[in-house]
Image (cartoon, rainbow, N blue to C red; front, side):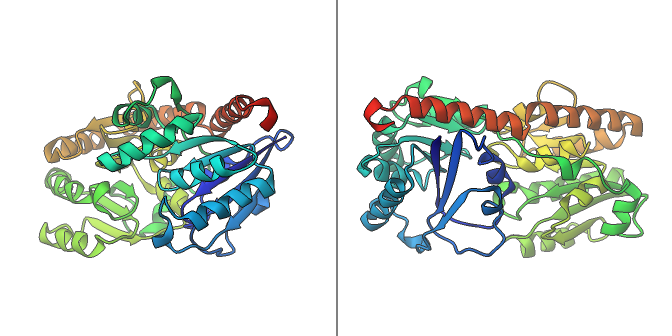
Length: 379
């Protein structure tokens, strides 16, 4: 049996994607997840799945790559748990995990999983990665777009060392539920006859809500029945509500705040929107597709590979206000049966190409290859 250690820089609450990533074959793998910072809130489901969970409760400001006491604590954890493969999740945990593995008497193999774009922007980070990645078995991108960014941005990184394992989800919660009319009554009663656009995500600059609102003002000029529902919270909430008022969209835009009923919300929509400036592989888009929704989304990062070559929506440039408005209006003008066909094709693609089972198989193969590549004395 191979013992896997995931090193994660911060616990932010139960995370379904991670839960799926560690749901490996229990006859072949054992998993331990170590959070460097963040406290247990009692809601993490990893333990229910049989994974070991460790919270080091370090201050976020202490998570420096040269923090020797933290490196030694990780080293002791590796030796105590008999770890064969370390997976450093995201770039902040990478230096600490790699150095701890090098100091360990077990000398586990190390893989690095990077979830976003632009993880090697500065020359300091490029230099650090150039040194660290020499000791890493593979660097994993969660989309082909992320893998291409990794290979392009890092100095001297052999292309064969970069592999892609696309994110995948368990979609059960998005495959059934209330009817569209029932869902709309639950979310915003009295607005069933409107054409519902929706976006789900943190209210931050990278999600590009400002451009969306400006484009939506043009949509409303042509389609006064259009409604935009915005689910999420974040630092831009006040300014985005101010822009909504400035554009005179108060009767057409509803800010719903953070929602735990995203499957119900998605069932209420006609079209999903994702105008982000950057995306590695957007889980919100996969959830919308599994819910049977066509999308208008930005042509960035992993979004084009998620939508694929089929007609599942419209791809636009993220800062093109006119193009975004045209994409929304084009879908809103389609017959309902055409939108439904696009949504059905989107669901089929999500279930077949971006499943949790496919992702898990990729990680199991990677871990076995990494473990077997170690020297015989350390297996």
